[in-house]
Image (cartoon, rainbow, N blue to C red):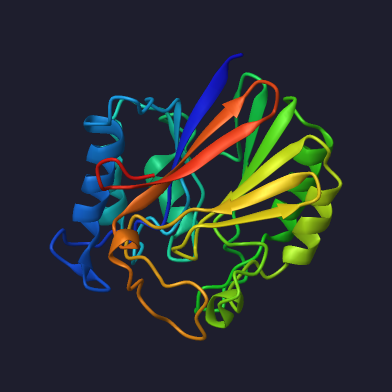
Length: 265
């Protein structure tokens, strides 16, 4: 049985200057650590991904210089990549700088074999505190894609979480129209999973016939289950992180988190 391997990296929060800090950590150094760990010097048993998916909040402050520097890094990887925006990103600027080259990084879907990835923009109607929603147009597009699948199995990717993580401060800024999105997903029998970022933690949910995972951040990690903001205190969970997914032809999915510590999953 053949499979398709995806590496999901999210919440990079890259800064304008490479020496600037984000919550006490150097975001560019953490990004380089993750690329080195997963792509440049991987463990012997670690596959090379078929696709890199960037899950949003690529920049801490959306500036052309930051996106251009990231693009230079990505161009050196010799790897197809796509992205969804996060609440810290500027979608118009990303499209202006990146266009539709390099594997349609700003497109709304990616197809490989029996799998179709649906890439959703959840940044509409932001309140300046981190929330976001799917616009009416994005919701209609998702509905059409789910009702007219181009592959046997589908995986939805967006930045904001759709289900609570039981941290009140984070659940206040989840997907604003999550109920509408969930109603569409629940009616799509070919849907296998949903992938998100935003919370800087790893979570797993099961809902009917599909599952959802959040991927911890490349940038600083946040402690789970908190009333208010708190950086991750556990040393083993502080490293830059991402998620591997193996998508099999029969619709099964295998996934694990990866931290930029040799031997960690």
